[in-house]
Image (cartoon, rainbow, N blue to C red):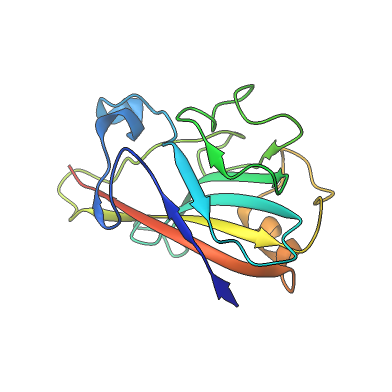
Amino acid sequence: MASFSVASRLFDDDQPMPMSTVHTWAGGGNTSPDLSWSGAPAGTQSFAVSMYDPDAPTTVGFVHWVLFNLPPSVTSLEAGAGAAGKNPSDSVLGYTDWGNSEYGGPLPPPGDPPHHYQITVYALDLPKLDLGPNTTYAFFRFSILGHVLGEARLTGRFGR
């Protein structure tokens, strides 16, 4: 699998995420970060984005964001694109562990060491996933199995 690069103007890889991206229950703005990516592999027909916390005190981590059906011409997202109605045209926000189909920011338990929030951009060889907004992260990942040409990852940290 090929790798390519993703970045945000708000934070660098393995650095703290700003309060604008943190869940409102922790005093943040609950706004998805801006992202830009480049160097996607040849043959990319669409992109997808997820944000996952492997450090969450569950047996399976915690999914904060799922966005798919981004056309290959889209190589950036403005801050806030994870909000319902703010995502790019024809893209779909998948169902998160927050119980809705939009971005939900970091909210680790008080006193936990900083959690790692893995933002992954997937380059896919499919022009579109025939999935809707109730699609869970698990089913999204199952659906892209064998169709990922490359991944780019940006990890942010947050603790409280």
